[in-house]
Amino acid sequence: MFCVMRIAIGTAALGRPAYINLGRDGALPAERTVDAMREACFEVLDAAYAAGIRWVDAARSYGRAEEFVGAWLASRTPPDVTVSSKWGYEYTADWRADADVHEVKEHSLARFTRQWAETGALLTPDLYQVHSLTADSPLFTDKSLQSAMADIGVPLGFSTSGPEQADVIRRAFDLTANGQRLFSAVQSTWNVLETSAGPALAEAHGSGARVLVKEAMANGRLAVRPPRAVADIAMRNMAGPDAVALAAALAQPWADIVLSGAASVPQLHTNLVPVPLDDVDWELMGDLAEPPGEYWAHRADLPWT
Image (tube, rainbow, N blue to C red; front, side, top):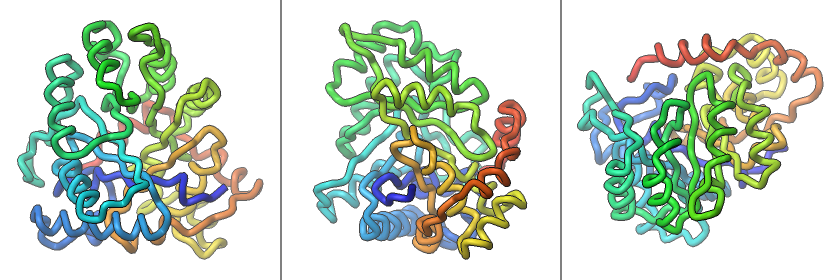
């Protein structure tokens, strides 16, 4: 069921000049300077707040996203916005769209300690998440890191990526520190092309954890190159395929928050068109899911633009 309070603004596409989301080219400023991108970010956040959205998601690796969000909060002083951010990746592109490497991942105590301080200098997160927790992360066995995270006094979460999301979700919620469950939230990829994490997310929700859905539009694939079924549903509802993709994620009973990655105010407005999905629509979309390995291989091939 559509409820704007269940939608958050993700700033991955707004905090840096290059990202892997399709459909950004016509949405962002022609010259992606820091000042122009800050203004674009403020415009989207203002429009989101006016529409009733009260959650903003950032990360240390999203270029200047934390800086932009912190400045927006300070200039607008909205009292009721929840802010989540993430640590674990470091932005390395130095504001270059043509950089060979845009971000580098490291789940270490040193990286956490430094990035927690960096985040705190820019904003005060209500939820701090491990960025892209995967099965091979040293976090699973690093008790010192787990304890240090638990000691910051802020609710902790983690995001997931890759074909093994479900296993990672279940393992992560088994972790404890200082006698309590370490994580209270998870942010995972779910969309009609990649549904494999659904059962594990339902279990997490059932255990009291907050579930955030990212990449509901498959990094723009469902908006720019929608399957025939999604395009037909959009046409029948006089909406865009992006709104259909968002509606599908919002329809999951375990999804507490669904992120919009809108890169402009017009994109945000098309995202927010309510689409009531019926049984016929779900039947049409029932066979769209790809094998997880195939989906994530496709995602890895998307260019940074």
